[in-house]
Length: 212
Image (spheres, one colour):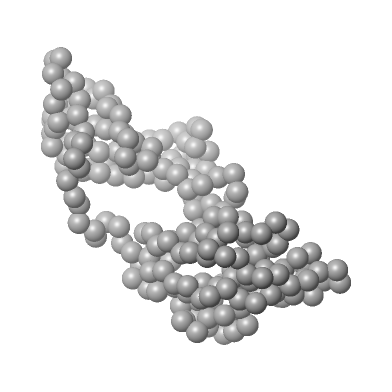
């Protein structure tokens, strides 16, 4: 971690740089093992994010705190992945212009990642349906799965994405890109299906992931 710290600190105090106010609208949204950070940026300002699992976090003390990390020149939105579920994480930001010293800190905010699979399922008011012998039916769903097509990316042009699948009675199979809008998959099976698993051979290539 010290090489990362040295890299961050080396960007402080450029000859022509100056400090900048922290961004406004700094928010943290928890997910399963990750947190998404968003803010309202100002043009020409480079923002840094500091994080740790200590509520006393600020940009001046983060190196000595548990699970500390710092990220320079972040873009919007910023995803932090591989986090411990049920553990509160704390975040602070500051800004600089042209490599100048960091300005005052934003308020320290927090979010707690959670285990999405432990949440209770709720009934969908629009059940999945398919046409069988000319009739629309809504089979019981016994299993749902998700395959990641991209990693928790912080590349501005790529957001994390994946593919959902749901299976159930009579060989019912449905797929979705967002978990909200579903398409019926034509299945040759007539037996009940109970589980879903998947693998992306070409991860981070969502145009051609070679999904199995």
